Length: 157
Image 1: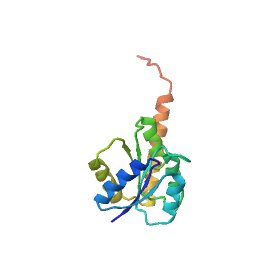
Image 2: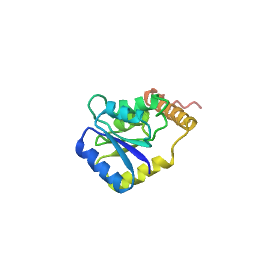
Image 3: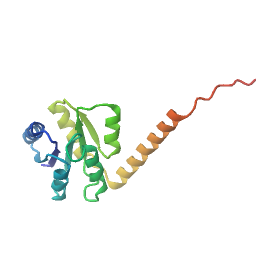
Image 4: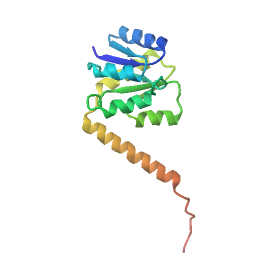
C-alpha cells in the first residue's frame, strides 16, 4: 500500500489522520513541522503528502514550495489541509505546488476519495510543467482584466 506523509503540528490531527489512513490500508509517516517533513521525505518511500498550512518553523505553503523545488520530490502528490478556506489561501497553496486543497472539517470519505484520486493521477514532469504554465497564464489574464481601465463605449455612426 502507498505511504502517506502527514505534516501537522497538532498531535490530535496527526493521530486522527493516521488512524483513518491505517484503517484504509495506508502506511503513514508523520512530522510535526516542515523540517521534520523534509527529513521524512529525504528518506524516500513517500507516495503522497498531506500538509497542514499552519505549522511552526515554516508554513505548509512554504513546505510545498520546497518540495516542488527538489528534483527528488517535485512530482510528489500534495494535498494541503486547512481550516482557512479563504480564496486567497487556497490559491496561494495551489500556486505553491499543492495538487489539492481540503478544507477542515472534512469527512473520512472526502479524504479517502481525494487522496485516492491524487495517487491515481500522478503527473509527469512535462504535465506538471504544462499545468504550471497554464495556471500562470490564467493568473496573468485575470490580473490584466482586473487592472484594465474601463473603456467608455463610443457609438460612431
